[in-house]
Amino acid sequence: MKLVGIDLGGTGIKAGACDETGRILDSKSIPTGLGDGPEAVLDRMAQLARDLGADKRVGVGSPGLIDHANGRVLESPNLLTMQGVPMRREIARRLGFAERDVILENDANCAAFGEQWCGAGKGESDMLLVTLGTGVGGGLVLAGKLYGGPGGMAGEIGHVCIDPDGPPCGCGRRGCVEQFASATAAIRRAKDKGLPRAKPGDLVQLSRLAREADGPERALLHDIGRDLGRGLGMVVCLLDLRTYVIGGGFGAATDVLEAGIRVGLRDRSYGDRLQSVRILPAQLGSDAGWIGAARLALS
Image: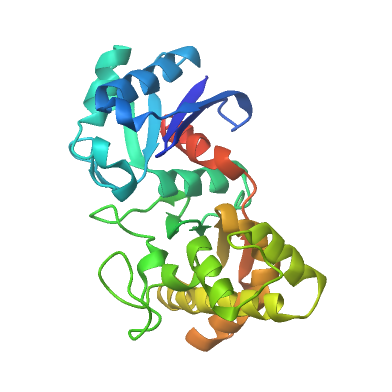
């Protein structure tokens, strides 16, 4: 059986086909072209699905808060053009599918489902994917199934408050994890520390310098990891999760963030369980979203 998934992003649409074990058969990527309007974006998504051989069902991942009942994106700052569009219905119509055969889900949840299926979380029935990018996203898998909660917002680790007096967040509150541990926050914190050896915005170089020597770059990434770990500590207390997969562009620095993450976990959790907590770098990269979306078509 061929499974097809689509990952809608603000700048690009990634899509692919895999078999029932998650083995990749084909993949494609095209510009989103939001400026052309929602109809054009929907046309592109449907054409990708056709090109990849979708004949029965298709899974779709999109940033933002998903209205599962009506198959649309309720709110997405990076996809304002697509807010309120009946995406599930319109893609189904274009493909000639029943509406129930287009499965729409949040993109971070899709990525978590992909990593748990055939990536870093393979074999783990319970895990949290944390994506470190422009913000901090999360996707939660419990007992081998995606868990979004009644409103679809479970797993939003980026908006756990770790310092009520911390910097303001785009969500309207202060001190959220993403204001301390996102790629955006890391760039800001590097500038605030005056790290001249790291070019502005070059997190690859910042991470490399942190690996090479025990200097200010390593100290900064330790602090960033600690702050992320403080957020994860609350998850440990609430759900007793033992597996955390770190993805997103800044997730490549997991190896130099981990020591700080474990300090933060000790700060904000309790009980003799931290030795069994696993902190793993994501394995599927930018394919995780469409792979997880394709997996949705399997259920």
